[in-house]
Image (cartoon, rainbow over all chains, first blue to last red; front, side, top):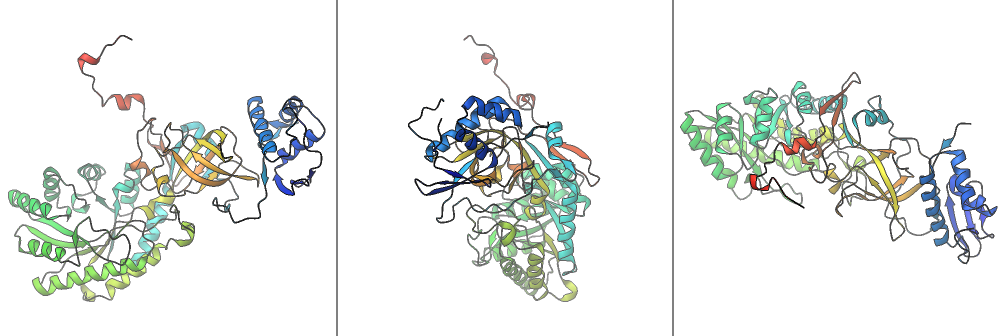
Amino acid sequence: MKINKHIAVSDSGFVFNPVTGESFTANPMGIEIIEMLKKDQTVEEIHAAVLDKYHTDNTTVEKDVAEFFELLKNFSLIDRHETTEN
Amino acid sequence: MEKLRYERPLIKRLDGNMPNKFGMRSDYTPKTHIEGVAVKDLIKQYGSPLFVISERQIRDNIRKARKAFETRYPRVQFAWSYKTNYLDAVCRTFHQEGSWAEVVSGFEYDKALHNGVEGSKIIFNGPDKSSADLEKAINNNSLIHIDHLDELYKIQELSKKQNKTARVAIRVNMDTGIYPMWDRFGFNYENGQAWTAINKIMQSETLELVGLHTHIGTFMLSPNAYATAAYKLAELARNIRLKYNHEINYIDMGGGFASHNTLKGAYLPGTDISPSINEFAEAITTALINSDFPQNKLPLLILETGRALIDDTAFLLGSVITNKRLSDGRRSTILDIGVNILFTSFWYDHKITPAQPFTQYTEDTVLYGPLCMNIDVVRENINLPLLNNGEHLVVHNVGAYNMTQWMQFITLRPRVVMIDTNHQEHVIRDNETLKSLLDLEHVPDHLTKFDL
């Protein structure tokens, strides 16, 4: 899973895609996951990091992160030529 | 290290277009407690979903309503509208506050008697009163509000047979300038039906015309319509005085005052547009005082207000079953609260608040109930914080018509808890069980066995 390296992410949750000119807002969890993707962390590493830091369970994280990736794909923030598995 | 509260990841595109149809978010704090009791504790103890009623709020509402009318008019009587919420604990709270009972069926009539209301303080409305119901009402000196001529003749016949005078009023429908005009109940003012009924009553030996009644509509947002109705009833009373030298005892203005719920399709929220009880009181009492009634013979003013007194006293607590994304990208959340127990979600965009702390991040969401039926939509669109499975929500202003119009459909009806003025909880209606339903069913012998 490769996030588009050109996108700009601010700490306050503002996401800008200079390729399309579109702007987004993300919540802190969304920003954390985008930052992890920018560091080329795998899906499994992202799951583990979220489970380690937050009060939740594996099923919820797996479902929510998968859906978040779908949103990133729909917004063209993930390179569509990449496979979904890293 | 203590783990942090989890919130699912969210990203939203920023659009600089027209405002969306989901509207602006207006609620920034969770509803964690009701009358000092934690929502999560209520759900833990009594289950989810759960109706919770505040006794304090009921008493506050009726006291404010009485004050609004009694400070403007010398003789006022409230009658609790049973159909709005006929749980015994609710009715008895209103009766303790001095309200009579207003019923619209034999079942409700018997419930009022069971609650200890004297027959003479029961107002019997509605188009369907059986002979047995009417005999009982005549015998108990109840106030029978006649809906149609067949009923008038039936009461006349029964009162003769019982050799007892029936205390009656007629329900009058009329044009008060509002749309739609309610003309299906009672006798019309403008075309003379009301006067025909009055003549028949006045010529009867066993019927005593004690009052005039109207109920101009439901969820009324115009106090002026009530003023028009009061003028028209006062005019009828004046004509009765002139023609028959007969004074009526009371004018019953019915109910229909809007609560602070928001009607579907309304541009502004109910909290902004619903008139206060003071505005209704001002319109009605001014019209009566300015009418032709001699000031020393002003009739008793009866009010059958239901919704405006009970809606904001009750909450429906529920839980998130799951979150899903629909094919068009919208978020949907499935709750254990459906239209089966939240009947008013067909009319209102209820205020819905999470019961636990949340962040400022929100998502446009469709709220579905738990029923396996396409009609089960609690809100077509709402801007809500991100909710995790198992988290709780509170639906506000559900006191009117839900605990009477709820359906036993697909699933069973939940408990109802009342929190008293000392913050003590009382289960005032148990949850249904399979047994509650099977007790009513009978299987013919030939259907008892089968092989599959």
